[in-house]
Amino acid sequence: MTDTAVTTPHDPSFCAPQARPWILTAAILASALGFIDGSVVSIALPAMREDLGATLAQATWISNAYMLPLSALILVGGAAGDRFGLVKVFTSGLIVFLIASVICALAPSPEILIAGRALKGIGAAFLVPGSLALIAKAYPAAERGKAIGYWAASSALTTALGPLLGGALLSFGGEAAWRIVFAINLPFGAFLIWVLMTKINRDRPSSSDRLDWLGAALASLGLGLGAWALTTLQSGGAGPSPALLGTVAILALVLFILQERRAKHPMMPLGLFADRQFSAANLATFCLYFALGAVLFYQPMTVIAGWGYSELEASLAFAPLSVFIGLLSGWVGTQADKRGPGPLIATGSALVSLAFAGHAISAPWEAFWTVTLPLNCLMGFGMALVVGPLSTAVMASATDETTGAASGINNALSRMAGLIAVAAMGAVAAGVYDGPDSFGATSDAPGHAAATNAAFAAIAWITAALSGMAAAVAWIGIAQVKPAQTGT
Image (cartoon, rainbow, N blue to C red; front, side, top):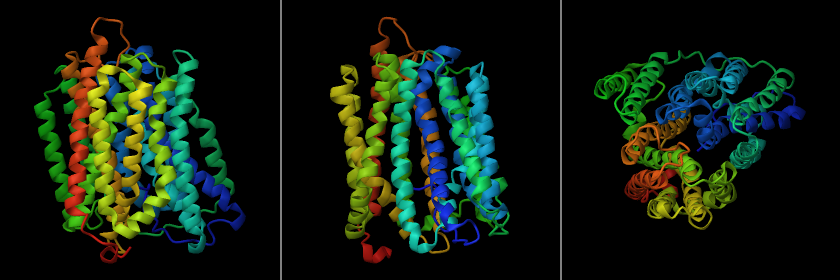
């Protein structure tokens, strides 16, 4: 999946031809900042919890406070670039992102860190969708495919290297080294601002459509209250009633659906879901990315705080995902053209399910190098078969006028799935561990490792089932679609 659909037209006045490599570099960096932020934080959470005294519920919110506004606002963020001008919106999102990075780096308490992460998510929602749009405006159609290829390969590489560098920093930099993970955004942000100010001309808005702020507010309210309800469950029931929060969350999401049905320019056009393939692709996306988000969030805590491995070693768990996607994307795209996307999505999801079932079985062995890492290679190979074909299936089910909305919905759903997964599986982890704050915390207490393994195994079994469900949905809903029928 990509950050946004490439529907933005080329604008010859946007920049000089010799400035295009600078803009491509900026687009790669902007995309990488958004993706790396989430993956590095999951590795740094044990150090953050120890340094700030954060509970498991607070650790969950350190992740979800970023994912919530990013998930709810990313569709509005993409449309805002068309409505107010790409450069203006992109720059505004970047500035908010950098201010939030400073707040996170200096945070004296979990509450301040959570607030900084929320502000960072708002900035990212207006920053991330613009990365491909910058390329589309800068490069003519004849050169755009090559530029996007460089963008995809470089983004995969930087996403793989980010956690490794973060893990090395956390392993050798001391207790408070996690703060540098946020501060390091500042020099990269300064470079982006320099490119925006010196290499790009101010663009004009390409749309006069009003933004669906009410839809965004209702989506944020529904997702936020739902995550709060699940987090209250994992914290032992402290706080507002989970039932009350859940009820209000459902009401807000129902109102969101009603708003999207009546809005003149909805952020999520519901008519797209009338297409069977579109619905199947997005259901498979939700199941698979729920599973992926849960494992990638709770596995580092298990490996670091439960098994005693270093952050650098734990960060290697992320490498296979990006490496396999980067290496196999071209071959997988060719196979999707020949066979249709369905078989690849079903096969890849089944392999991911096998990998997660392997994690569930092997958790008590605490064998990172000989079992966990090879299973993550299997997961990475499976995801490499899925990522590109999912986009193909989504795009094939949309018309020329709805490709942007279709891609945006699929992208937003994948992020929403991760948001809900972190909150929901936190409740599972706390329940199986039989303690709201001990899972993921460094401890020498008797039985800590065994309880941590049991909790992670429960999460892995659930994610294996969801990945298997994604495989079944893809096989039933997409597998019979042939390239000639999809227009690919």
